[in-house]
Each structure stands twice: as structure tokens, then as C-alpha cells.
Amino acid sequence: MTRPARIPAAVVSALAAAGVLTACGSDGDALVVYSAQHESLVRTMLEDFTAETGIELEFRDANDSELANQIVQEGKASPADVFLTENSPGMDVVDRAGLLAPLDQKTLDQVGEAYRPSSGNWVGFAARSTVLAYNPAEIAEDELPASILDLADPAWDGRVGIASGGADFQAIVSAVLALEGEDATREWLTGLQRNAEVYASNTAVMKAVDEGEVPVGVMYHYYWYRDQAENGLIGDDAELHYFGNQDPGAFVSVSGAGVLASSGRAKDAQRLVRYLTAREAQEKLADSSALEYAVGTGVDSAQALPPLADLDAPQVDPGELSSPEVTELMQEVGLL
Ligand SMILES: [Fe+2]
Image (tube, rainbow, N blue to C red; front, side, top):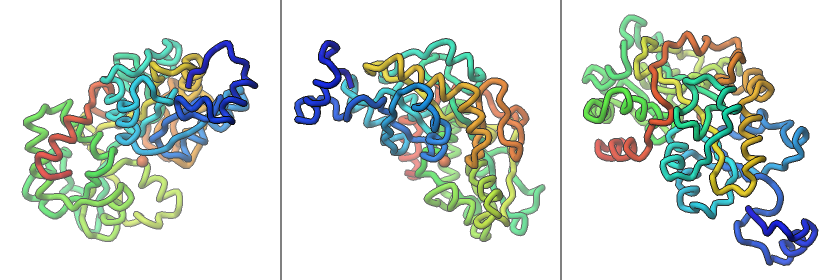
């Protein structure tokens, strides 16, 4: 929210209390953060931000596509100062609409190049690996697919679980699209549409694998590691297969942080993104129960995880992952 610069704060408060200043819908001095990443992780990473900077935060939490579409609709009038996504395609929607301000170079330099777009208009602050959960009682290790693309083969009919309605799975599709092109992606999705059992979430996929409903399921790594840390209550009979080999199935999805070009608090907004990617917040991520990957240069992720650098992920520019094209393709084949 911007306010006329020459009106004293006390007068502004009085006017706001009287309902005179309602232009942007924000209630006062807090920096407005639209956040689609897991609430607990974002709050943990930023728990000391206000104490250290004096900048109050106001969060609006929803999922990637809801918030991305909301920002685009609001355009330059958006009350958002900062946008945090769970996966990067949602950020890409806002970036393509020209609504992001370039980030300070100092902020960009805090994060490994693989975890930020070449545009420099936003930056990664966490990362998550695609994995194939499998049930060793239902499938032998040597029968596991070498590539995520193999799951479109008729041999997998009825034998793979996916959470195709979620932003996580759609980010994986965006990586397949970037790496393999439109025709190959359409073909893959057509096979998956026939083969896959569709579940509501990563956790539901893991549970289905655990219970032998399907022998394998596509998900992100941290749901399994979290469950293990909580004594394997949901997925103790599931194991993880990493595709590696720069396969599209080894895709590492980046959670993004960006500053809205329309923000009247550009300096504070830039400061928040710098804080989120600096060592202190990145170490909080690594030490938290989230078990997502830290992306800050020189910060090690949680010990329970295989090192990010060892996953042999495919190289994709996280700024080139599109959600509108993915949604169209998935609708075309009947997966959405
Ligand atoms: Fe998640």
C-alpha cells in the first residue's frame, strides 16, 4: 500500500480508523507477503525478521495458482509487496505479466545459479526433489523405471499414483515440457492419463503406495522424509527411487521469492527477500522439520537428505517453466 508521503503517520492511522483510507485493502504499515509455500516453513524462516528489522509482516496464504492469478488480476493495484511461491511456474505467471521488480544483485549472489532464473527477477529460497515412491512388496527394485517418461508405457496401466491437481505435479510437467518439448510431453501425459490413479496430494500418493494400492507414485521427497522423522506413520512401507541421470524425473523444483514492481515499500520488500536467502534463514530451513533443501550458497541441507548436488538433476532455467501451457496440455488429455 502506498500513502501520501506528507501526511503524518498518526493522521493516517486516524483516517484509516475512520475508514477514509481503504484504497489497497491493507491495514496499515505491515509489509504484505502473498505466500504459497508451506506456512510453517515460511514462518520459521522469518521468525526473527520483524525483531531484527522492525518491519511488520502481514501474510496472505493460498496456493501458487490462486495467488499468481490474484496478483495478475490486481495488477499495479495489488497490495502485495512480496510474493513467495511453492513452485516456480506460479512466479513465472507474475513475471511474464511484467509485475516483478529486478532483485538486488547481492540477493541473487546468495543463491546458487541453478536455483534462480536467468532473468534475475526472482530468486529461489528452497528446493524440492521429484522422487518415485515405491512399495518393495509390490515391485522389485530392478523393475523400477529408468525414466519418469517410461510411466506412460502401457505396462504401467493402473500401477502409478499421481497428484495431478496440485502445483507440485504440474511443476514436474513444466520441467518435462521444457526438457522434452510439447509433442513428447503431450504423448507422455496421454499415457499417464490412461495409466495413473489420481490422488489429492503427495501424502495421499505416498499412503496409496504404502498400502499397496499402486506399486509406485510420483511425489516430492520431503513428504517421505518428514513421515520417516515422525516414525513412518503413513509411508513406512514405501521407499524412494531417485531417477538421477538428469532425467526429467530428477527435476528439482524451486520455491521462489519476488518483489512486486508496484510495491510502495520496495526497499523493505527487497530486504525481506535478501533475508530469506541469507545464511541465517537458510540454516533455519535446514534445521527445521520441513526437510526441504536449502539453496543458500554454502549452506548444507538437513543431514537426513541426500545432498542436492548428488541428485544429478536435469538443467532447466527455473524462469522458463510455464504453468499456462502445462494446464492447457493437461486439460487437453483429460488429466485436469
Ligand atoms: Fe508441499
